[in-house]
Image 1 (cartoon, rainbow, N blue to C red):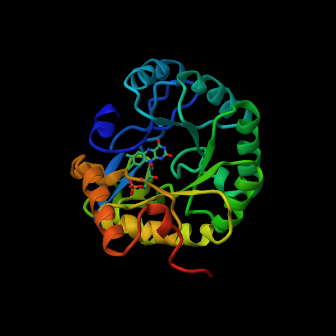
Image 2: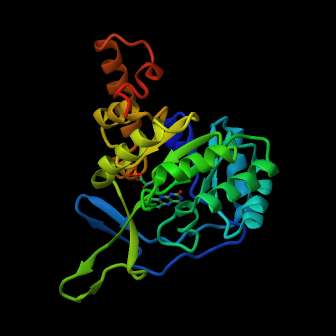
Length: 270
Ligand SMILES: Cc1cc2nc3c(=O)[nH]c(=O)nc-3n(C[C@H](O)[C@H](O)[C@H](O)COP(=O)(O)O)c2cc1C
């Protein structure tokens, strides 16, 4: 995480962490498909207590970070949140939407999303972001529920549920069979979700999903994203942060803008 920050990311978001250590799924838990990644890691994490020590190192280096937390119940996610704030993150991101774990259904439901967000908001006093899934039948309704429950921002999108079959083995490649697709193939899905959410909610949207070039970042801002996360594209190297920042800055100058906020949502209303 420190390396990512040194390479130009303004903020780093941790891997999701839960109450107890968790091994995740056996391999194969990641594969390549259609220029994207299909993963079913299974929320591998060391548990919030052990993770705090690592996060304190980030704090000492003055690196702004957001902790992604998850829990199977409102009580559990609130417990994780209560411990996580001890590391003094800038915000908490609620993973309500991992498509290959038991928490996958939370962000399919307006009720559950509202309940999980409210529970964490009642527990902590730092900003809380709700991470949503494109697999929900109505992501806008879920986004509105998160906003109503007090979410300070929406993060869109988590991975798109998918599968890959090995034609020689005639069986699914991933041990978990189903995984989450990330990278370039999901970019247009993310743009659509952000565009629709932008025209419905009043809280900021953090865009994520398939961004790998400065053109993608500009497109996502125009759709309505105030900030952008980059995941899969880091596999090509950590220069992606500086390259994208430089490209966006040059675009802004060429187009007569002075800051990114001026282009957020400029792609027009519904
Ligand atoms: C290997 C892998 C692990 C991931 N783990 C998490 C996670 O722990 N929590 C979470 O909210 N999203 C997780 N994601 C989803 C990403 O944060 C992101 O929403 C998604 O990959 C789309 O962005 P990208 O195309 O830039 O990677 C993971 C994605 C990948 C590829």
